[in-house]
Image (cartoon, rainbow, N blue to C red; front, side):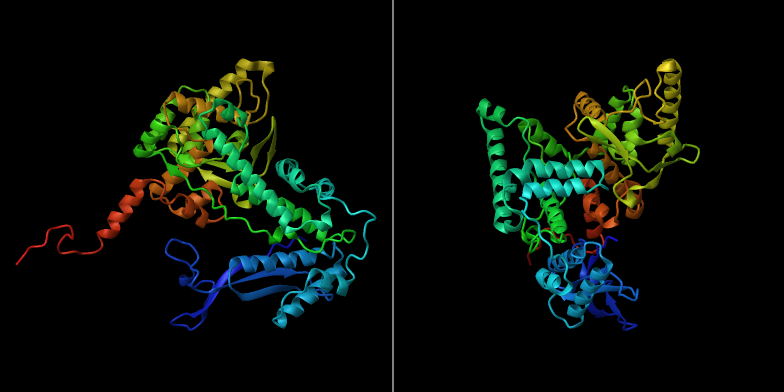
Length: 494
């Protein structure tokens, strides 16, 4: 059974009336902006351990750590140690005994070699130790229960980055320095691509056309792929891997980009320079209205309307079936998504449990979908025997499923025809979230409708996108202070 564990922050404050410890519920643990308060409390972790030999449940839990990174490192180390059992229950129970012993005595966790020696885990070795490239191929081939999109992502990291930079290294000789050199080389390539893009020489610009900068978030995913492969190697008795070097590599933090609205000032600068202010842009309500007015003449207006007002992901809208709709009740069940892998598409469940949800449709959206259903029925009659009965809500005129990238191309074309600044189709989803919060909809409702795992993510990402909302909040706050005289008024001289 997979064990992920979790980290948490707590303190020793007590309730002023009951005297009970507040623990993780202390309001001082977070600052007013929702971020962790570094000056209050300490970090800890907990993870379910294999049961004892008598079947009794137990967990590893430690508190008093100085940072979340420290808690995560210990948690990762415990998972690496448990992996040494390679599925053997008796060995797993013995490893858990050693972990509990260290925690109970307030000692550091045992090292990999100590655990191997004390449990006889992994005594065998191969005749020849594989290179990193050979092991990565073997590791990926052995992961049979893997989503196609995840497998494609892993393969891209391996083919484009890991093998070219460190594939030649023998697995047991891989060191943190090799990984640091790889990411340094990636950053050098990024700098070259940016310099060529900014050059006035058309030949230099052409030399990097089609090449992408490897973002920090992608670099973290590359590291995660390698770490997963090395964790598996660490648990193999036939590989002399001492520790997971990917766990000891430091990368700069990759904060999730927040949506930025196309205000008149930003739009003016964009018209003058062609520079987009941020990676994720959203339209103002007026710009969204202009897009929808232009999209009214498009056959798939209903799809764009649904994304703009209900914030569906592109793949969720493309995979929506008529059996998911209840227009009488005004609801839609979101339980599938279409993922594009190159030119191929697959239909899968959403990545998280929160993605499977039921959304409520407003009256206008119900009218739009009913009108589309009637048109779709007429198209089916016209197609006759050529109709592809996919059961999908949004299709081509012959009933065939839509390609997600084709839908994005249609969106981009319509936005350009409406003379609007560029956003992605996913940006229309961001705009729907921001509009809901700006309209005063409770963040819990917005989070559930969008399929987010936590309300914190929703609030942190979208709460202050529209400047008029932030301005209204500032004015309302200032109005609470009953000043007798405006501070800007000139002082009288006596």
